[in-house]
Amino acid sequence: MIRGETDSCGNSILLDRIPHALRTVDSLAPYVLQAKHADSASTPYSNSFRVADARSADLGIDTIFASSVSGVRYTVSPSVFRCDHLDTAVITVSQLDSMLAGCAVFLIRDCAHNQTTYRVCFPAHKLNTSEVERSHSSPDLRITTKPGAAIFTFGAVAHAGELRIYDVLGREVKTIVLPSGSTTAVTSGSLAAGAYVARLEGRSTKFVILK
Image (cartoon, rainbow, N blue to C red; front, side, top):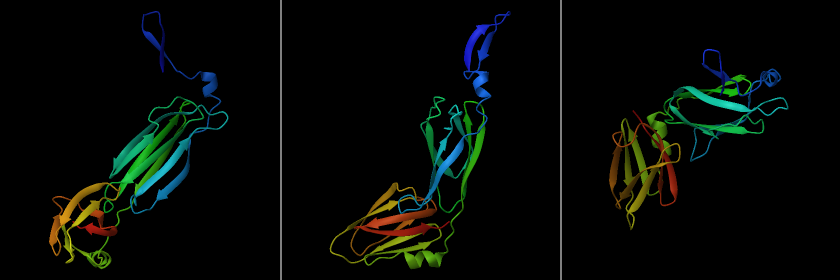
């Protein structure tokens, strides 16, 4: 909206930045394309998709709103739109905790006031204790989990090892120096319940801290 002339009472008149004649031509809502679910070691619970309003009569994206956001984080690029039908947007949504479900609802509005709603949700991924213990050991490192804690046992090697712990978004959240032949416990006080990757001397091991 833009501010135009004043009326007979001196009140400002707000004018729509898109002429009515053009608005009536663009009657189609923005659309989602290239929805892609990423599943990798660094970002196992992430979804990226593109949004466009690029048909011949389209006027382009105006705004993107997110609502009902729970258990996820998101980015929208670019963050400002120019009502140009050549522009596209990329929205990336990531689950904060793989053991907790998460959702976000996006309202995409074009410059002719047509709109599309797009919902992204992630289920909770539950693992039982036996599955966790069976899959989380390496020749020099054993990880034992119990509710609220993960216990790292480092083998009797010639030197200390530096253990790095990453969350499901690939962010390093903790670094621990493990002396040879040592046992160290990490509790839910320093790491929230959820899935993690431990990396030690080039080896990666997945584990879960249970509630």
